[in-house]
Length: 178
Ligand code: IMP
Ligand code: MG
Image (cartoon, rainbow, N blue to C red; front, side):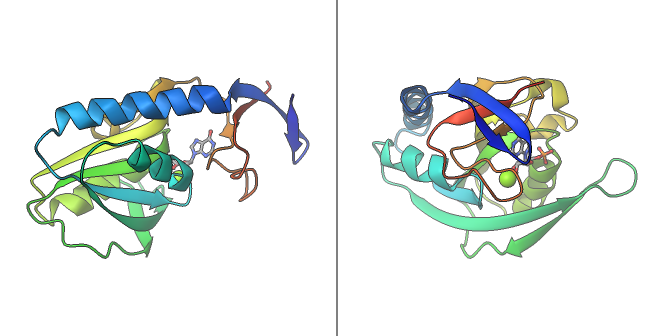
């Protein structure tokens, strides 16, 4: 069934069962790639909170997690600035870090955030995103290492993804009708 926010109609894109399958698949890929390691996950608030908590519960290995909240601004030229509204409160030096994001659009936010994390000298940085809009990507270093599904540029909501703060709590994912 479709839902409506701010006069925009959104049609179902992924059901609860499909999301659970996507999350399970990513968890298994990460568990395979990080076997014998103890990754540190950084959940990027607020959008990835549902994805992060489901992903980590599906992960059959020891890990740690922390949270950040970011706000990005498109600066002049191609360089963007990302502000940490809620700062990272973890020592990631020497750790295998996996950032958990809801969606990669232009990639500006993750481009800037990865550069900031590099300065803390982690052993590695990987990016796991639930959704990826490849046609929109402007920053190649923000291409996710793990993602659930590629989608077109239409705006999506639900399962953490919001429209002006609303619709995050929808258990399914919906996409705007054109
Ligand atoms: P980027 O920096 O352009 O990659 O934008 C990433 C951020 O924009 C995500 O973390 C989301 O908060 C937001 N965003 C991008 N596309 C959507 C969408 O379709 N629905 C909801 N939020 C989105
Ligand atoms: Mg976000």
